Length: 449
Ligand code: NDP
Ligand code: 2IT
Image (tube, rainbow, N blue to C red; front, side, top):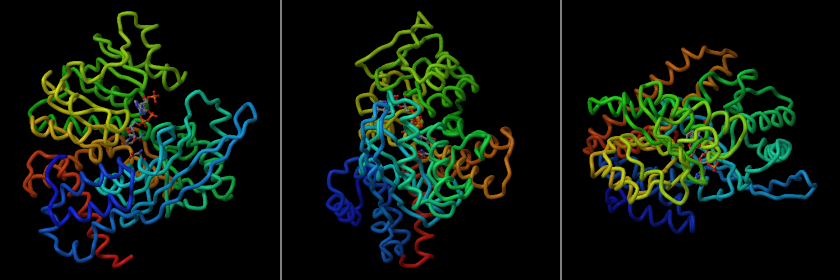
């Protein structure tokens, strides 16, 4: 809990709890936003009259479907697919697909809800949505992944369109899966509709920098927070959790800015390399060979693989949680603060528990919430849509510059909004309010829909 919820908002939150039983991650995400909105409903009474908050908490559409597929042994497997089309006030629903065994409606709704405000912060014309499946990609063959993606898209395609709903990747969905998903969409619809999905390969409509965008963008955001403190990444010891897409390109940009990352992880444990994580080795293990991070120590003998302990026990000045939700607890936050951490940037979505966020804010740690910090991924997806719509493709340098400008702008808007609404340097409040006001104004303008 970051602040106390306004008494006018409390009944709205209670209604969300009773309408969405058991969806604890969704409750957590809604609570955090509602806790920020007290001063907004005072300044904008029209939002209350139009029941904007109640409407924003109810997805425009929720699709749940069966995904049957056959494994390599010929056995029939059944998974559950989801797409939550949360809000289209600012543009077509936009947000990734997550394939992970933990996926259920509550996870997809928390992600879709956060996506509304994140996408608004990018300043680009995209609404909010999210989807995925409880399918576990670990240990599956390429053919199994392809058959699953084809079956998933065979149901989902009817809900998509470049002006309707535009998915992308998230946990367990990278360029391989996007290729299979796009291929099946193209086949079923008989349309080469590039803008229907983002994160595509560079040889068939993808954008330069999309692969790197979330990690690079997160580091650009933290760099802006450090500048406010008259600090920089130079010589900083950093810890980045995860070793997937976001973590890898977070490490790459920290290295470029002169920092040193000493640890990264996967769900089995973490690798500590005091000489600095060898990023080329991590890329080879994770991106090319799809192996476990524990194998790192086979090639770097001095490094250690540690299980059963928290990666946040390692002393660092900058922490960037980039794996999954609620991976950094109140106790972890306390340890980080004790060890001299000055900045935290959430590469993942909601990786810090409410207790952790509270501790960081109270200790004066610069804390970049996921909605702001990791928005570079979806922003570059919107740039991919822009290139697809104009049948153009931009250079790496130009696209990177656009991304950096967007991240600087998000930092400025969230910083200034926090000041304006009486919570200086609280980027949680700044991001929630700035994102919310943009969406709310558009909803008021469009009438009761
Ligand atoms: P990847 O699938 O590429 O990597 C995920 C990483 O996180 C892996 O190292 C994985 O380990 C670890 N991880 C996943 N689930 C868990 C878990 N339950 N416990 C511990 N570790 C876990 O995904 P991304 O890098 O794309 O996504 C990481 C985070 O960033 C997610 O929160 C996602 O929502 C967020 N994000 C992603 C964006 C993107 O553009 N890809 C954009 C914005 C946010 P293992 O392999 O062992 O499961
Ligand atoms: O959480 C996210 O912002 C993403 N997974 C990226 C979404 C996108 O549409 O690029």
